[in-house]
Length: 179
Image 1 (tube, rainbow, N blue to C red):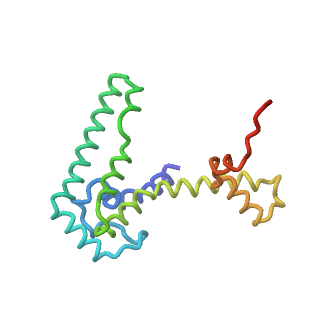
Image 2: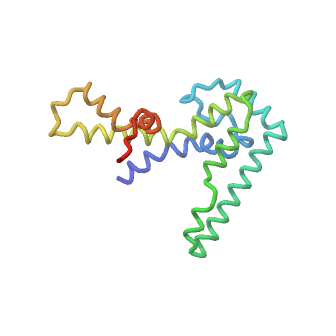
Image 3: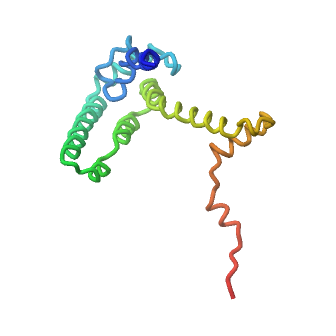
């Protein structure tokens, strides 16, 4: 079990620079970043990163982001040390700050943003896949072994992605006043 655990998390060590890119793109060596899964042009990425580093306005955004993240960690530690558990909920979420910094970049940094958004969504997409697979296992159990793949697909769509438009549905219903 220990070997399996170490093997699974070995990938984090090899992709350390890629993951660190999110909060510190200015000090990232592009040769150490794994861009294969994201379909990014290496030359464009290098040029955009160089341009980003030379522009004070945009490089300042990430310097500011880093200092805000450090400040948040200090606040969290202080609240934990003082056992102020409810105060932890009032601290701004880290992902909001990170996405805010990346969203502020103009589209001329498209390859840099593409890499950032790709890395930021890795864990969310993995969660979605795991959730869908769990739903599939629950739906297609031994009891329901006669379920066809087409019916399973329909059940999965209902389970994972169905969100009714309640406003639209409620507008279509005539209200009946009581007498």
